[in-house]
Image 1 (tube, rainbow, N blue to C red):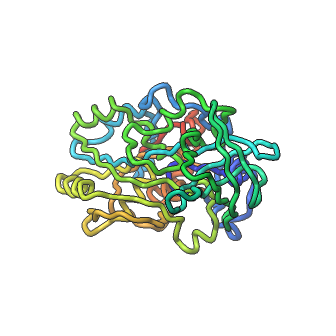
Image 2: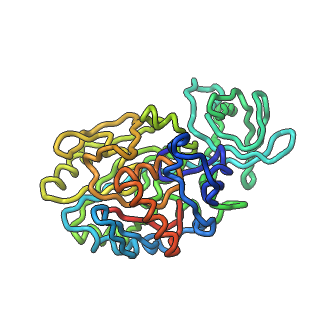
Image 3: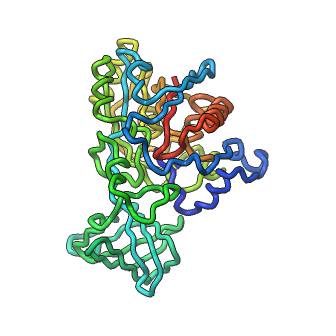
Length: 373
């Protein structure tokens, strides 16, 4: 898993067991057991803070382990003039379709991306579908007064399917914001589409939000600029791997699923300027950290690049670019948690998570944040 948002689309019960503290196998047979923690389900945020920068912020000094309780709007005084804040400018697609099987029964699809096709031919999308389907199954998606039919054309090896729509069909026009399933919604709420999108989202392509960036509003960005903190953008499109359970085999290969990214020359130049003035590179979110470390060059700088990354940052990994990390509180056993543990130490991070829970912090996508300095 990677990306900022962990949607356990395939196996939500597995995440639920971890949150409830259900015992697992020992670390000897299950190396991911070392990244389990128990979480009271009441701590899973169902709505964002009233204001983006109003979320609580737990500040961790990774050298000493000292903790401080602040709010996100305190960022300008927690950072220093000359620091560089790097954000992920990906935009979340309206990728969730609600409907039913033609034979009856509720069905829900999450579009993972369109497959290449010739003009005037059927449009095909890779998707995850909740509910039993098989090749040849007909699905009907509806929203308001619009209706769209699809056929399950094939089934993939990872549980995804290929949905075939008529030529010219626009499935995203019927889609809604794909909130993760631990945010319980019988139907979308009016503010979801806005609050599950960052204010700097400009490049469509993600199926989940880079949620650390959700805390930054226009007012806070202005305050950071007045403080002398520069802003740079990268892009990483959060893909389906963010809602697939991490496997022990992933630890063995040292690779994650591929995600498309871009780091422009202007962003690379901003890193060089920050290094030159003695500033820190502050990654907003694990997605941003993956891009920066995927493009790492000598002397802590980066090279402008675009393509796909499979970088898996986990304990033992070296960070060559990122000096500080703003991030949310992540699911147990997730690649996101492993990345934070790589940056600050596994025991320290799990101790911090326990302190956050005891202090009433809210977890996951719409929850509070932590800043690792």
